Amino acid sequence: MSTCNLGFEHEDPEPVIVEEAPDLEPAAEAEVRIAEIQAGRDVAVAKIEHRAIDEDTVAVIAGLRAENEALRAAAAPPEQEQEAVVVVADPEPGPGPAAEPEPPAAEPSAEPEARKRKNAWWG
Image 1: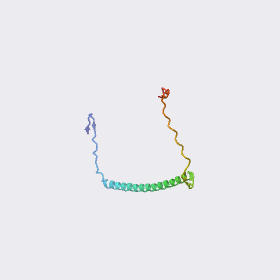
Image 2 (image 1 turned 30 degrees about the horizontal axis):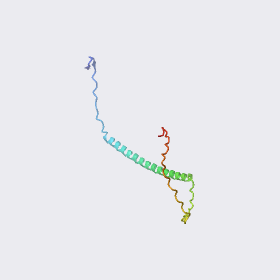
Image 3 (image 1 turned 180 degrees about the vertical axis):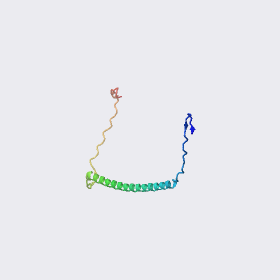
Image 4 (image 1 turned 90 degrees about the vertical axis):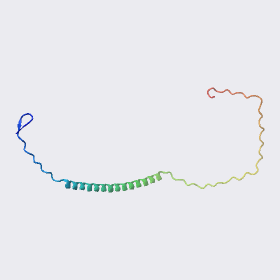
């Protein structure tokens, strides 16, 4: 018997026998390797699905573009055929009536011009 810190006596505990743990490393390594293989498989499947989705998306986009072009062509006004335009040159003018002489230039007068009254708002 042993006495505790408070002064009470207690029976001695039975000794604990510790057994050596079994070696788990080979099993753990195998599980890790299996997980790596499964992860690689999942990645490969995801890439294949993604590629298939991309191909489907490209096909859908091409179809939508073709439909868009067809609708635009149907909605556009019909093109009008242009007729050939014939240009006829004017014949050169022959001797026509004689040109009238210019009137004589007006001579400035000695009288000053009347000043215009300016608006104060407009300068």
